[in-house]
Length: 115
Image (tube, rainbow, N blue to C red; front, side, top):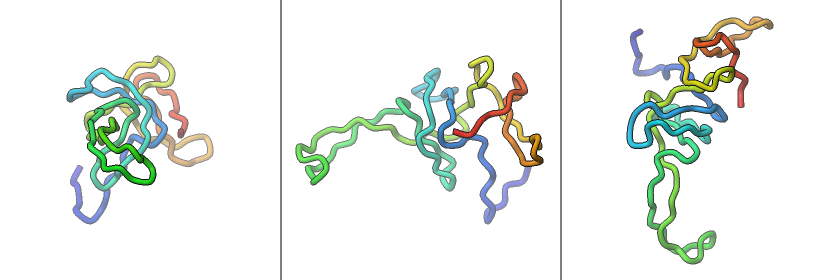
């Protein structure tokens, strides 16, 4: 599939999905997608890729210091969890009962609910 520079390709992972990390330092960990950064093709996953960030004191955090937070992970390093079996699965898209496109797990054929 040819990637065009002016068109952003559709991602198969959305906010609220349960995913498993298949590559990198956090390999094997599962978590919920908190945010998807479409332009960078990255996602922030709960409890995955934790980094220590040094922060100055501010109104929100009067103490300052070192804060641990999730850093974005490349979408290519994530795999969606099959809702039926609980194992990682590839994602497909097909027309649902109402004619709209729905995502489904290729392993079991189960439709993936949003959020």
